[in-house]
Each structure stands twice: as C-alpha cells, then as structure tokens.
Amino acid sequence: MFNYRYWLIFIIGGMCVDYGHANNLWHKIAPGIEYYEIQKTKISPWSKIHVFKISLKFNRLSLAIATDTSTKTAAVVHDYARLSKAMLAINGGFFDENYRPLGLRIREAHQLSPLRPISWWGIFYVHHGMPHITNIKHFSVNKQIAFAVQSGPRIIIDGHIPRLKSGFAERSSLGITRDHRVILLVTEHVALSTSALAKLMRSAPLNCIQALNLDGGSSSQLYANIDNFTLDVRGLAAISDSIIVLSTPTV
Image 1 (cartoon, rainbow, N blue to C red):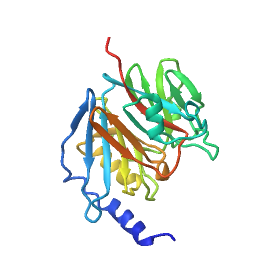
Image 2 (cartoon, rainbow, N blue to C red; image 1 turned 90 degrees about the vertical axis):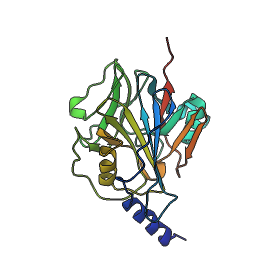
Image 3 (cartoon, rainbow, N blue to C red; image 1 turned 30 degrees about the vertical axis):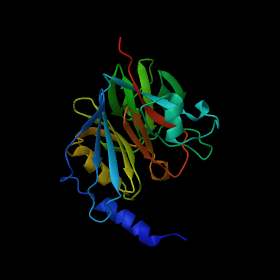
Image 4 (cartoon, rainbow, N blue to C red; image 1 turned 135 degrees about the vertical axis):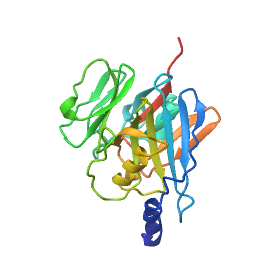
C-alpha cells in the first residue's frame, strides 16, 4: 500500500531545505575533489543533499555504460564504479524502456549515442580540459570533445534561472562554477522542484553559473569510494550509463 504520509513528509522536507544557513564547509577528500553535505531540513533529519566539487586539472570525467557490465543492459552506479575503478559515479542522462541512452554520449572522444534535436535539453561537455554547458544550436561534435552527456532541462544559464516546470522528485545535476570547477549533486530523501534545485546550485557555497538537470526520480543515485571516504546513495532503478570521475595520471 502506498504510504501517503511518508510521501507528504518527503515532499515537504524538500520544500523546507534551508540553503542559507547550511554549514559552509567543503571537505577535501582527494586532489581536486571536495565534498559538501547539506543536512538542514526542518522536519526530516534523514534528508540530505550531497555535493562534490571537481577540478579537471587533477581528474577527468568519463562514462561507464551497460555494455561494460555482465548484464549488458543496465546496472546501478555501485557496479559501474567498481567495474571502471572510478572514485565517484553518478547517474547520467535519460534512457528508453530498453535502456538505450536518449541523447548524446561521448566517452574518451568516441561518440556512443547521437545528439537528439530537443531544444530545451542541454549538453554538458569537456573540450580541451574545460567544462561547458550549451544547447544544440551552439554545439557541434568534434574529436576534441573528450566527454559529453545530453540531458535536460538546463536549469542555470549564464547565471540566470529560466522558467522551469513544476514537479517534485529526487534530483541529480551537473554544474559549473565561475572558476571552471564541476559540481556533481544528488539528493537523498529530498524531493525538489527544478527551480529549487537551480536556486540551490546558484547560491553559495555551490556558486554555479551553469547547471544541467540529469535523469532524476528513481534513477538518482551516487556512489563514492575515495581513500577513506565512502558514500552510497542508492536509487530505485538500474540505469543505462553512469558519469564517472577518474583521477588524471601525473606525468
């Protein structure tokens, strides 16, 4: 039987996240990786928002895909991280009922799935070691793009929040700060609207000037295993691919 009382608390907990008074402390957990936890809700202390700030000077983004796994169809981020030996893994973009990715995916400069002509989606990509988020009108595939994932909607565009649809769900997101750091965010027992997510990501200490919503709801999940730091935010569904963080080998 569906627990309406739990769902109501879940929604209200997300609405009551206190962005302004959360403890402003980033914890360095590896070279170029910092972690920040928001645990500041009025009625649901088990609700958390997990945020990682990534420097691409020390790390790189890649994709783990279902064909890398034993099932060949779908997996959870814990499995993707383990198989790829990634420090961090978060769910990626959308996929269809057969777990085929919807939208552009580029891994190690190789295109895995094509661009979809959806105007309100965005493309997060890495070009010559710099992160970018743009739309299909201003994007073209080239061999200098090492990583890309298409999803939507864009929730912060050049520091501004566009008009976004209502609706509450668990969220996962990618963002970019003014100093070119990559923000990875996932909610845990916090249902947010995309507008609330955008306001959170634009505000201190996240300070994103660009942000892209990833596949949320039951797909939202994250796994981290970095030295002595471990975090496992489990989703309710297997996914077609995962955005992973790998350390860049020192020369």
